[in-house]
Image (cartoon, rainbow, N blue to C red):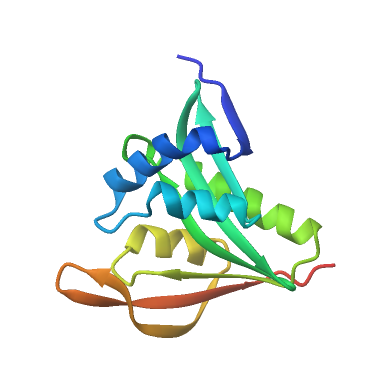
Length: 152
């Protein structure tokens, strides 16, 4: 079967589907309001569509000469298909083209798949944020990672 793939900006109309995907993927998901606020704040928000359905999305915030990846999610049925890697490569390429110096993110230490992705694209661990994420048993630390993009 041939699928059509489209990477495009996120819109308000996408938010119900995106919030549903986030609820399916995470025990402590973002709300539609979180995504709406990200759009209204002018953050870089994009979605990957496959045959008209959203299969991945990302939210990144720019601060001076840095980009901070706030959310990168692939729907459960498409995880492992390369959408997360493609989305992140797109964000990195756009950020480099706009001469941002670095990209930052936090990731749960328990999220081994995401950590392997970030490692494979050149992110390095630069710190730990203690008790950053809500967790079933209290709080979980966040691994702080950075990608140096000084290529302009």
